[in-house]
Structures are given as structure tokens and as C-alpha cells.
Length: 386
Length: 136
Image (cartoon, rainbow over all chains, first blue to last red; front, top):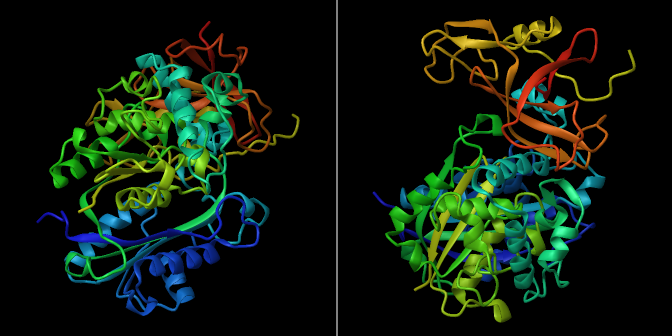
């Protein structure tokens, strides 16, 4: 039983403001994004019968459903970090296809920037001292994402000859997309030389290899194929889905230069029945330049170890033959913490032709790949327009 | 001993033998007889074959630098940048996350696969951490 084209995304939107939004809490951002996505679809809140979310407390889906005044028949708080939202689309497709619900609301909201001032107001809970990382990682000064991803990147550079210049190609290409997007946080000119001359965050990562830390929320609405054409905008079909996780800590990786996108991507391509050459636009989670580079390899857009050569010569920039991260990415658009919602929304907008100056002409098929944790869990979606 | 300000591990029942051995300046890892292989981090069972027949065996403390990074921003309290986080590939098979010490933390001095050996940091009366340095 394939989930191909069983459901469509009929609503997708972000909070009114993204970037630095000091006057809103995470759950306020969830609600605002939900309102905007439902308005985008033209669906009344009363029709929502399934809620998918994480990041608002221990029981996120029930917390959010209560806050919004929804009595769901189906909820899911799968927490795989930044890939949660791609995985929710797959789970929603399965639940809708099984007849367990009919209108699925997937929400996100985080105050990665402003929330630093008020920890405990939602988001991620305190770290459990009994878990392995507390004994075998944190005592050595490994904590935030940059301190882990950089070690994966270092091995990739050693093993395959990937260079800082190649990583910088992604930062620069992504910035060029951001310059076409009025909502992007970082829009100043950026060159490869600028990236290489910038300060280290954690060698081998310069600051421009690292994503932004912002406040933002987003939401999408998913319905079954039978209702997909009943709403304001043309449906964006879910043609292929895949999810995978193969470790939590970097120590759990047999080969640190991989990601589970090799599994989730394969599943999504097989379900959709399309080839890599068919994809018009890619939205690939870029927590770091390296994350996007290694994911392209894992998804099979190039051979293992050839991601650096693949992205060279500004191939992923506007006008290049491989448009990627067209909103400006986590690197230059926004990145509140679990950025996967925003690559999903951007893919929907591209397939609807709503992207103005950054529109990829004639985009009919998009690939979205979320990555969560320390390269731990991925969700891949192949989405299509009629 | 000056006050130790970095995060300290709190041993759990399944990891206590590891930390007890560290206190004796011995690197001891869980070993699965069925797989004839070490594994890490410690669990009550082998994560490969799910055998619960586990013993502890002493390791050489020698290995290579699988990968590393130079942390220029403190990720945890008590650390003064720059410091080197490392994943060491032990000669016995498993990998450990640790700090590389006894070397200038600079992109010029560090390279993947360089030989390293264990050294010990007696953090408190209860906890000794296995760190690594370039092999002598």
C-alpha cells in the first residue's frame, strides 16, 4: 500500500513576523502560524481533527490542542528535532489514508533567539543526567549543535578532501537566494573570501558555516486526496515520503560522514517513482553548510564524497542548475531551532509559484529533507504540483 | 585540588565499573563474549546481538584520532576556549568522545588518524576522566 498522492498540503504559512520577535512565546507563535496556515487554506479551525507538533512542553500535542481549542481524533508528538515536521507529513498521510482523521494541522513555534532570556518558558526540557550524553559527551565540552556537527565535517574533509571553500560555496549561494527574499534576516553581500576570513565558531566551521538563531513559527494543513481540490489554492501533492534514524549521538554512527537521509531519501524516491533529474528544486536542511553538502550525497544527487565538487561554482545559487534552499535557508533566512517547518513551507510556495523574485521557473517537483539531532534523524518528502 | 567547574558525569549502575576503573587510571570497557567485541557506551547488554552476558576488559588506552574540532566558544560551563573535542578510535574497536590535550589547539597541529593515548584527569575524589594526548 503506497501513500503516493493519498494526501495534499492545502495550507502553509509562517508567523506574521520572523527573526527577532521578543514579544511572543513559542506557543503564541504556534497559534499564529496555525491561524495563518488555516487562512491560507480557507479551512475553519473547527474542521481540524488531528494535531502534530513538538516543542511546547512534555505533552506537546495535547498542550497545543487545548491551547487552540481543538479536540483531536489523532495526535502525534514525535520529536526528531528539525526533521519532525517532514516526518509529521508522512504520519499524517498514513493516518488520513487509514481513515483515522481528515484534516491534519502541523505546527511549529520557537523563540531560539529571544527565548534565551526566559528559559523554562517552553521548548526543550532540562537534560536528563542519567542519559549517555551526560556522562560521555558533556563532561568534554560537547553540547550545542556546532560542537558536534563540526566533528562530522572534519572527518568528511579528511576522508574525502572536502574543503572550507566548498563549504563556503553553500553559504554564499544561499545568501544570494536570501537577497531575493524580503523576509530573510541576512541580505548583505557575502563572498567566499568573506566566509573564509570570518571567525571560527568551532574549527572547521566559520561563523558563516553556521545557521542563524531566530524566533519564528510555521504551520501546514494536510488533507486527503478526496478533498484536496476543495480549498483556496491548488494542492501540493505528497508523492513520496521517507523517515529514518540511525543514531542519537555521533558515537552511535558507524561512519560519521553519513546521515540517515540515505534511507529516508531512497524510500521517498521509490514511493514517488521519480528520478533525481526530475526534481526541480531542493529544500535541504542547512543547520550548517556541511549538513546540506553531506545530505546531497546521502540523497544520491552525487556520489559519496563528491558533495564538495557538486556544489562548486555556485551551482546551488539563483541561476545555477541546482536551485537549493531558495528562501535563503537556515543560514540566511531564519533558523529558530527546529527549522524543518520552513523548508516544507518554502517547497509548497515554490510549487504554487508564489515566490516572486526567487521563484524557480516552472517548478513542478520539489524535494524536502529535514535533519534533526546530531545528523540523527531525517525525513524526506517529494512534493508535486499538478 | 582547585575546584572543578566543568560538568561531571553521574555514574549510573551500568556505567559504574567504567568510572571505577578510570579512578584506578585503567580504561576498562564492556565486552560481549558472543560477538567477541568491545562496545561503548556501557549498557547491561550488547547492542549488536542483545546478549546480556557482558564482562569488563581492560583496554590498551591506545588509538587514533578519528575526528576532532577546535571549540572556540565554550559549549559547557568551565571550559576555556580554544579546546579540542575529539572522537578517538580505540585499537580495541569502540570510539570514545573525549578531549585531546598536550598539543597546541590549532588547525596546523591536528590531523585525523594521528596516534593518541589515554591520559587521566583526576577531576574530583570520585571522578577521573579519560582524556587523550598525542602518542609518545
